Image (cartoon, rainbow, N blue to C red):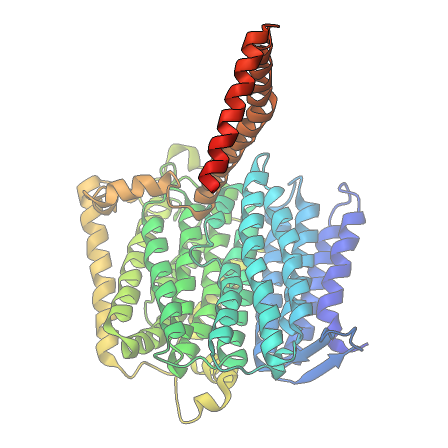
Length: 609
């Protein structure tokens, strides 16, 4: 058996095995999960930077079961398996005594299997098979969270399913144009028909990464789904998979050129996602919902970087994808630690936890400064690469990215202050730090945020730059940014965020209300009110349109029934009654009718003549 099958088969079989185990069996499901994920880590690390191919005989129509390992796929495979193992370790403590633990472990492992299959597949049809399999585990992981979580699960399923239909059309069109469905053999120039295929595939990729406008299920899932789900799928794994496929589309399958309309389209999507999502993150008063909007916003930076079609932007976008998986996963795990120990993630009720949970607080700080782009942490270096590329493509894109960093820093100052600083409430005086099984994954991820920043040359030169191949020849992207002007602007923006927070705290006397001057600004307050009522939610808009269409169709149906069942019958009965009235046996009336008919016939014949 080829070793490329193992990252797919091991977690899939282990996931099915867990479903057969009694819920009363203690530690068996945890041991199976840890063993399966750790084994996948060992296998994926042993395969890193190697090339391999596994193929089975095709079934015709270009459908071939081809697995292909090269630098990009081995990189994503290593990252996804490592994060899955850390999440599994965290869940051993977090999910203890949870009634849905067995299902969660099973879905987690099956998800890892499908992700590995999608990353390794060289044939678009089989990649689509694994890609669609994720819809099932996505639904299951959300639905098990609470009694009413199935509403959010359906919402996530519908949004992803609709965008996946677009992706299916894109795959069919791409296969028709390229004459093959094997990704490694596809290289298309952007003709009008190829442009259509490109856009359809991009819709599937950015939807998987939870970019706007396909994002609205993520904040809802942050409340309804088990917290490890947020650290695992929307914050890390789906970003890795979605941006992986976007990279494949832009770097290999289609020849995306700078200054092209499609490049500008991607950059606009990235910029809109950055700003709108981070603006929504600002006003959230729940730890998990705030982080969920940041998970969406950070995708904007990745799309913006890759959309520039410049080597420095592509390296920055992919590096940011990796960095985001680390610090965003870490942030959600700190939220889980707070939820488990304090019993809530409501920022209005939290405060002063730094003294009770110093390690959780330390991990939060490292992850928060990383996502905010503070040097020398990893987020700073990936953002500076994206800034550089965005500036080369236009000042507007750079300013949008920089403004997003300002609001990111402001919102994390608010979150950190509200949850960990301030006065400790009486109800939290007995709160203790989480156990080591929850702290270890957080600490590892926080440490990686430091290492991938200070020693960024290793991940950039060894993990990311080789993905570009000849495009990266003659370029150096690692080390401290060479454009000191951009670094200076970044530092000014971060300082402005700190000043903004201090002024807000002084004005309101509260960390959680420090951004009220933005929330309740004259124009923004109304927009925020509509946004909180889901007025701009594409899913809700779609439901309203479908509801209106259903009412219109129902009215038409009732009208048709009325015409056939009421109007036509009444007309027939009315004519019958009138005919009975006219046919009363009076011969004089009959003669008059006959003469009148003859007169009309004569007039008709004369008119024709």
